[in-house]
Length: 258
Image 1: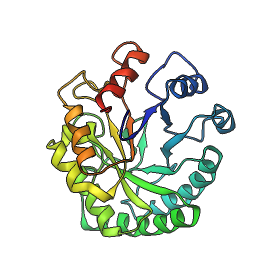
Image 2: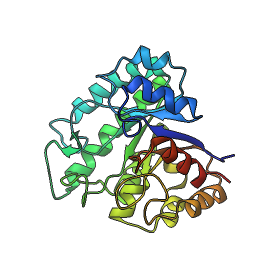
Image 3: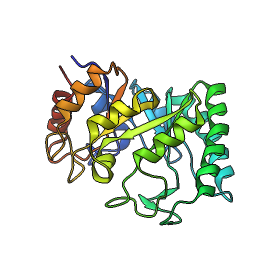
Image 4: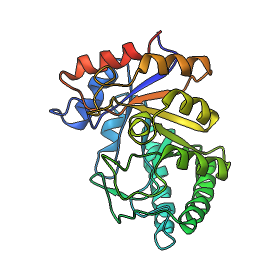
């Protein structure tokens, strides 16, 4: 048995199947499900699978850090809340700046005080939206070395500082340990430091972004640290299968089961 709710990102496994069939496979193996975008999916068909969904993208356009487009993040966060109701999704994922096919929509390579303040104020507004709707918005840390160059305030230390500055119970971190390993490392101390700021944890191994056990991260040790600090929330595998998807999910379960 695991101390945690284990979820799997349906975008990255069973990739030869349509998304609804992927969700069914994940659900049949006893996992909850994460999705990325919602606007291009048949949400009712996903709901009809009976799967439990833990998170999905919480905005469509705009940069939290940009005074010209932060309002668009807030506006589309409202739309995301409505979509989340169909699936019963409790957590909606945000980035400090918009991604298009994984790349920065408007790359910026230096963070400024204005970016920080803009993101802070937008997240305060989004937190109120979340409180009214009963959902939590989670700001995801990203790595800018391999996957997402041009995203300011992307490291876990930045997203943690933002979440703590907002100080709203409906604004938390989507703590992605794959990204944190590439950008910062020291993962056990990181999860301890983030503590109550964590909304959900996402995992993949480094290098390669595949399931736990394929790279350098000692996920059983991280699972023990999470257990010792009393974390009982969701851990999501946002990772590609290195080979067979069933075996990848089984490896994920082993890494986070006592």
